[in-house]
Length: 149
Image (cartoon, rainbow, N blue to C red; front, side):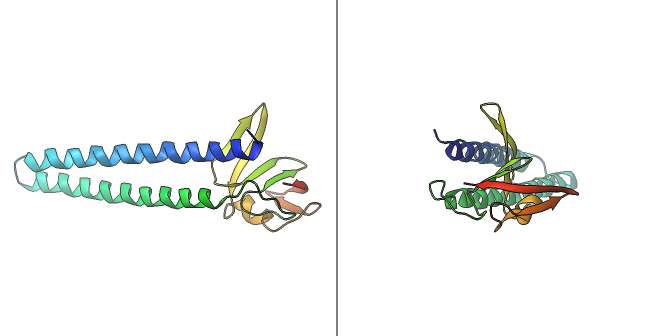
């Protein structure tokens, strides 16, 4: 499997894992709501239901965020290349290697560390649109782009 495909798969696995956790959270909340509705009425009952409703709304927002991340992954074309940094680029600098995708952090493949970063992340926003030979400064450290794939 090609390197970009492996990195994209790592991003997809992260999204899938978060999706499953959130779906389970929603199921747990719905079950708790069902149990809560069987309880006796009163202030304690109403407070418990209200708290569970808030939890369900929060989980729903997290689910929407996961759907947005999945949409971003769907837009990444790992087969195309460009001479400038964009979504799906593999960027080699003199210090690190970045895969412009989602912000999931460091991924190690065959002993090499790659940083999966989003376009709108701090480092992503600094390097998007740049070309081989251009430099950028991150936390006072200057990095030069050696190659864009």
